[in-house]
Structure formats: structure tokens, C-alpha cells
Image (cartoon, rainbow, N blue to C red; front, side, top):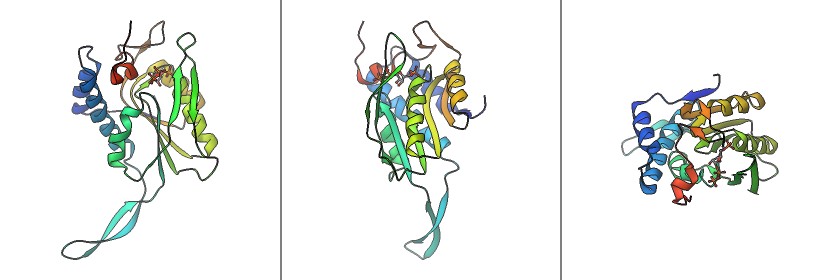
Length: 210
Ligand code: PRP
């Protein structure tokens, strides 16, 4: 699959297995999400542009570098919130723009309930954060919102993506790179990723119900 970058790091495989495990507590689940988000963020930022900057070390002045682009981090509520802090640790000057979206349980279509993106002055690079890409509908709606805002370089960070959802997403946005810890093969009849990890938002925030 083009423009899909799957982590091939042993730490990613290790931490993803703990994340998937149904016996993992919400507290541990949040930690696993943080660890995987950092690995994803490192991978997804490896071609960001730099500009020269002067650095005064305790010993001398030297030529340093700093990030040159304006960066936006766009978590999709709720579950995308779990990726924000680790990504901000690596990109502390990024702007955070929240998008509220939930998937209608009957139709599996995304329903937008919060969007305060401004109308101009778009960031140079936008990172969409959501741990799950199932049908791809939610991330598609988020990317469409960023395109309308005028963001030229959009990248998706997702922990687990379903192959059918990725393919569907790339029919509309073939140029948008997706960074994932794993691509799972199927969606079940309820449009849940299999093997997946269940409902990321519920596991993260301990709101699972029967
Ligand atoms: C989940 C998940 C994604 C979306 C993925 O959110 O966090 O946002 O579904 O599905 P899709 O690719 O088919 O659109 P959910 O609707 O459960 O909301 P939540 O994050 O508030 O739990």
C-alpha cells in the first residue's frame, strides 16, 4: 500500500501486543498509547524542514537548527486525546486543534460535534491523531476539514488501521501519508477492526459498558 508507513520496530510490536490485550487496564492502556504515539511521531516527522539557528553552548557559539514549519496537531475526540501529550513532547510549539467526532453506531458514519478550525492562516503541516482507523470515515472527515482550512501537508497518526478503511481513505486522499503501528486485515459486521483492540476511547477512558 502506497503512503502507508507501518512501524517495524521491536518496541512497537512489544507495546502494541500489550495494548491489544483485553486484560490490559485503562491506566496501562493509556501508557501504551503514549509510547506508541511517540514512536509514530518520530517516524512521521523525519522529513520536517529545518532552518539554521545560532546556539550558544557553555563553551562557544555554534550553528544549530530549529524546526522551520508551523505545525498543527489535530486530535479527533475522544480517543485522539490520548496521543496529544506524547506528540506535544516532541513538538512543543505545535498548535492543537480539536475535532469532535463520533461514529454513529447504526450507520458507522462520522458525526461531527466540535470544530473550531479558523478560516485562514493555515499551519504548514497538520498531524491528525486518532488511534483507530476503521472504515476511515472519521479520519476522512478530519482531513477534509484540514484541506478546507488550507493545510497542504497533512499526515495521519493512527495506532491500528484496517486495510479496507485505508484503501477507502486513499481513494479520496491518495497523497496523505498514514503512519500506523499495525494494519489489520478486516472489519467485522459492526465495522470493528479485527483483531484490533476493541473500542480505544472506551478502553482509554474506562467507559466500557455491555
Ligand atoms: C472511534 C475511533 C475513531 C473512529 C474510527 O471513535 O476512535 O475516531 O471510531 O472509526 P471509522 O474509521 O470507521 O470512522 P468513536 O466513534 O468510538 O468515538 P470516541 O473516540 O469518542 O470513543
